Image (cartoon, rainbow, N blue to C red; front, side, top):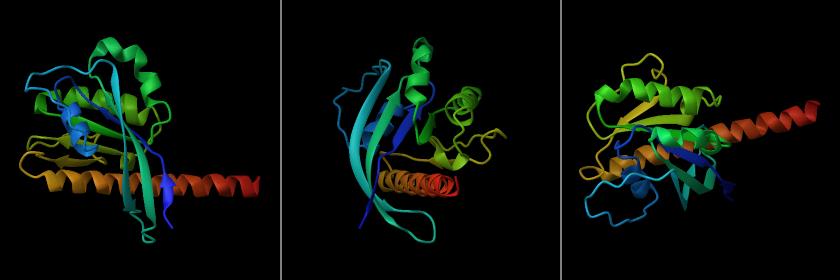
Length: 183
């Protein structure tokens, strides 16, 4: 029997980094864009289901009912960001150019570190063959994906991340139950 897991995953990063493209791919959503860049206004929430198994030794199967929050990188929505990150289980940081690394550190600080998420609850996705050199991001898994050239690699990376989120969630549930028993 599968456990039902309902993660809220944020997709964040600088403007024009490819967050919507990656979000659509992960959620298997199609959106006709005609090749023209149209920035996300605030946030788009995509809901979809996925199945997997935990990343620990038990490899417990789960069914995930995912909320994927494709967040605008525009600073004019900064006052909305606390509502975005409230209750999040994981963060996908997306960036396209090495010159965006300082901005990436800021996104990490706001959406991961200040929300007390673990590095295992975050993944950096880039569509270029670059990796962050920042010490702040040293513990975060970074994946170079090309949805056009290697869609299966992108899907494997997301499914692995989802399994890690499930395992973190399961551990926090057990810690919570242990706290209730010992109280």
